[in-house]
Image (cartoon, rainbow, N blue to C red; front, side, top):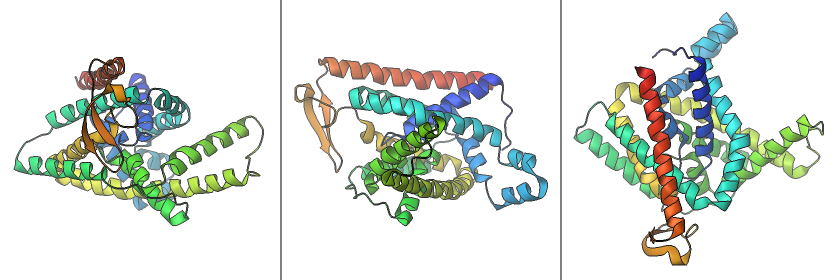
Length: 332
């Protein structure tokens, strides 16, 4: 695969897709990789990640920055992660508010996006055989199993934080395997994706307003240290997972994609809008299942809250349909 040339409109849409990935990665059960797979740039994402290796740094030191930049397809990565960064410290803050005030509706939108992504991804598989169906079923079973694992307790030891970083990046490279859900299971969701992100945000805010680093605050200093180790682990995981996935996609594309589709289906329970955390007693029709994380309900369809959530599910479906339409239009 070779890096693609992008127009200004393509570059803008790539930044927007990066922002969507950043938002998706913050919600337990939602994988930013789903956005990449549904929007048609997943293979280029994995290709670009896999190019960051020892050979890339040899090129950097022997030939200079520009050959290195082209080798790793950095024009793609810079635009994408510019969008992810914008989302992480802007739109994601709005998302935190919406999740607090309109949790059910936000989950509904992502639920709609995920089920529509599954349709398009499966439809685009190059072939269907018993191998694809079996790998899809196995992926679904593994995805469902995550919902029955009891969450661990918070741990800020640097080795464990590096491990969490390696795990978290799976949401970027493995569609359906939510890095934030895995961090929730490991017990470090609030520490790494709430407290540390807020510490970085307020530190940057203090720097831009001329108030310094704020390192006289022991708690902020601790959280910034944790964030550094978390970033280190994410970088390591990115290189390892992308290399593995590039080889799997190159040699076993249909089986790999069908397994990822299974993961996506299996993780749908994590974004089911009607759970014990989101639904009022009068809106409950009957209970579907109880896992280590939640109790799932089928809602009363006559409820206004249910109807508004159904609207956001349709909105999520519409977003993915538009992304698919734009992607197909660019190919023609």
